[in-house]
Length: 138
Image (tube, helix red, strand yellow):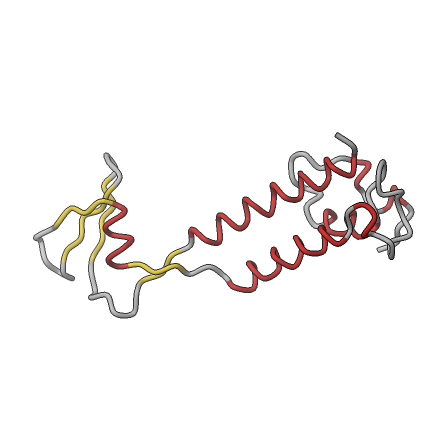
């Protein structure tokens, strides 16, 4: 796999992970009744009760999620990930005519390096992907 393909695969993996985290975010449904919730540390479930009541009802995590929660991803984060994916696709191979850094086969173009620059503290980032090493000024 070339450095260009490695960088694209690495960025795609990061965006996949970020997207999964966002899509997993939940918030209380506005039409759900108020409930006290205690997480069951022994299984994949929760105990729910009316506020102040000592009578608890056990629910599976899936039932609790479906009954009381609603997806709450940050739409701006998802939009940024989608835009970054489109930019990466536009800067692959022969479609990458506007970039002046990199030869598109062995070296990533300037745009790909800039996309990766915000993640340089993440595991897997390579020194050759540093913008400064490629002669690109920030």
